[in-house]
Length: 495
Image (cartoon, rainbow, N blue to C red; front, side, top):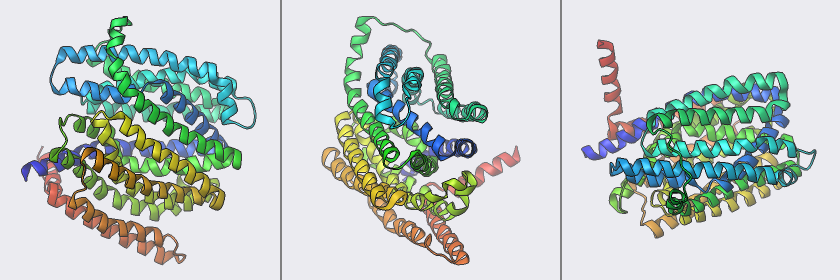
């Protein structure tokens, strides 16, 4: 029982740490998003989204999946406390990161005319993609160094990088957009990518000084890791490609305004959920990778993560869904009101993601990159088809419905595949929590259609209190969170 309590406390602790960082990031991001939305409007926001989606697709196509396969490779050496092997592996990863950076930049340069043709149906943006090619190189180097920090459990450094990157992004981009508006989009994307790279190498080089080498023997040692990463890369290409196809479709079927509205609504909804999911990539993935074999211990680690995610995120979703009529105009401008219904139905997808995200890391932790690619491919095809269908029939509201339906589809295919391939089983606790919490979320969505103001807010408040009470009581049983919090307060008060 003590081991079980420690497991839940550990998850809750690091979810709280990175959730707090993400919460600060959300506050900073909200200010930045509000200002950018005000300065650029939906059309300018859509332009930023198209450039970002395209560059991410190029990056995912050329980075060979090193940011994921490197974590798996380094985690093994770190857990075995093999210092010499660890330093050598870091050296191999940095050599390959440099190669992928050069490759990505050259691909973006050469393909810039095609990227312009595929992404836009108006104007010539070839020069923009040429100028953005260094961003692809910066992203490749950043990904390699962040993998080193994640695999070696440098959680405080990762949190610091996240905070400084968010603050720096705000300080850099808002003045640029204020003075030059849409003309500042390309310089701002480069400046933010450069800042993120400098922060990553600053912390990583301090722990593992740079000893770069491009010897053929050193590069050949990384071929196994590259082979593992290729499937991750293909999965990343499909994911980025799906986003790019959706945005390009909206741009061609409607306008750049539609791209901006969809991108803003999707970003706001999924960023909010990041408060709970932010610890997955930085703490959960390396911890799961360190478990040597499949079995009860592995299943318990996955199920515990799902349980904590569900309990933490449900009250947040109820509050967010209910408060959107106030939050949306407060955080953007009146031009973004048309996406209110889309965002409220999209919140249902986040509940499903609380279950899906821990499951999706199973093949990553086991080094089964082709299984990961298969699952990602199924979801990407589904989301593209559903969004196109939903938008063509019901407009922006249809895109929100499509995202929610795609989340349900993703859960079903993930669970059955993980059960068959990795002997994973949902715990009785997970099933019980879903049975209790999902109806509350569905009732919250139903209450958003209430037209009487006092009844709308009263219903939303009651549902929030119910969900928060249930979550706190269950977490209290598992982690004694109230006693631990009071103990810390008393200790600080005595000091």
